[in-house]
Length: 332
Ligand SMILES: Nc1ncnc2c1ncn2[C@@H]1O[C@H](COP(=O)(O)OP(=O)(O)O)[C@@H](O)[C@H]1O
Ligand SMILES: [Mg+2]
Image (cartoon, rainbow, N blue to C red):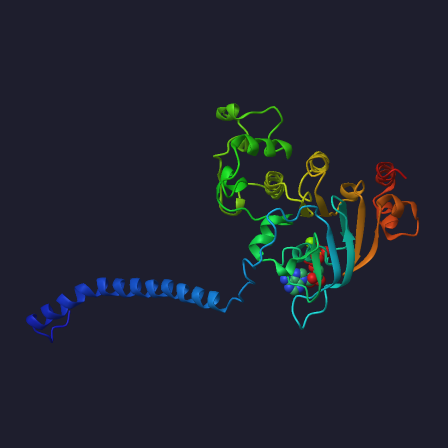
């Protein structure tokens, strides 16, 4: 094509031209490899800049049986997420007796979840303190604290694995106990035993080796919350916090679970953040949070009997039939 060059030079040029493709390919590969490796650098940078959590264990460690009664006391609790942000909780003072069932109500953003998170020190109090059985929780290592209290969060996180590893993370329980817990949260019908798990249409929950995908994505939010509840049942904590734990399950299941909780956790202190009044109407007391302050804190029946209370207004807003039903349950 280029008559001006002679044959040897042309041959020489062609010999190099034929390798250029593989050289280019090599270049692209190395570039992609470099890019991938840079992700690792990025991650190391990110981790090295993460703020360190408080220590896992603090000596002296709390007694092995702590919390034995489940008495909760909040003293002047003030929480804000960052120094330049406004307070989310303002000076909360309240006491919950051992075994009491307390509902927490309030509008979105009133600080309900923040209150629940503060019990696990996911957010640290800016001022004040929380006492569980007369021990200030800020004096307890995170591992001890978080393993003794139980929370069923608003958006449960489940790790991949099998149903057994999800429910029994540390391999502490017998299969029969796990089945019993699943039955109590109504994920498997009562009377169902492990033996039926080979049936074609078997419930995934009746086989403890069922696969759980990353983040529990093969379950609905409601099912994940029920799994968390089954885990709480196995653990039998003295203090249980639930953050709208039954928000994503249907009404009938909610009621069944309510019964289970009252029965199984009769001896435990329960703090339930609820959006359905029906869930907490038969509780011992309810806290009504308003912009991070306690607006009302009393027995549901007392609040309901007082037409000027905010709780009364909330119940009334649910409609005539529901209001009558709520009153009936509360015994007003
Ligand atoms: N991680 C966070 N960082 C900063 N502000 C937050 C954070 N989480 C919640 N908040 C603020 O705290 C307030 C209360 O939130 P939250 O406790 O989740 O309310 P609730 O559960 O009652 O809906 C909200 O105004 C929200 O903006
Ligand atoms: Mg919330």
